[in-house]
Length: 253
Figure 1 (cartoon, helix red, strand yellow):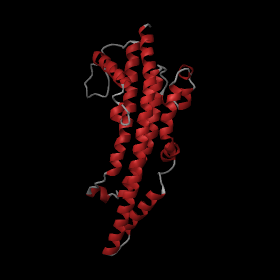
Figure 2 (spheres, one colour):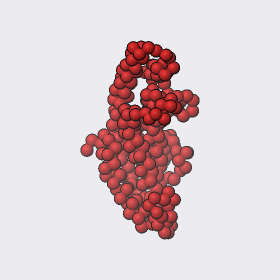
Figure 3 (cartoon, helix red, strand yellow):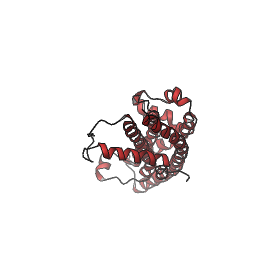
Figure 4 (cartoon, helix red, strand yellow):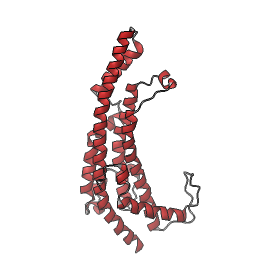
């Protein structure tokens, strides 16, 4: 299997193994409502059970982000504004900016969540906000394995947007030449009084610019998503070995 999509990645043997064991333990211990956000346990889990549950949760959070990245390609392609949206100034350009920023942010979120999962895999249990690439790859337990090497291609698959993500979160909106042109055209269409023929030409320009931006973005996002999934599948092969060893280790405790 090529593992180029979320669906294929979710069927990886490591994912199936972790989820099956975590679900079995959860059914045995959890007595809360299936629709409740708060978990109520019948008893305190053993160290091994706790390890399986925490790892399963971290893996689920990571895979959710991978799925959201795939969905982003659909979100950016579809725009059907309601009258209320139009009233509040939602244009094709503003929607594209929103969808683009969401994709960029989630590329880095996916790696952050993967690092948390690696921390849980090795049963380190560090606080999520204290986990970083450096803290993971330099950890003595992890550095002695192949995990740092298999993380590198995953990081490389999304590194293009590393600084853009930080800018969006901390400084300013994302902008490139294509989006700026679209914003300018959209503002003109909204605020400048034009004759019927002129506004028709302006709308055609907006449609053309939008089509060009969409074609480029969808190609780029799809390639990033495919590379992320493929490199993660290779990492999952290595993680599966660690997982099996940890289960044996914890069983002996």
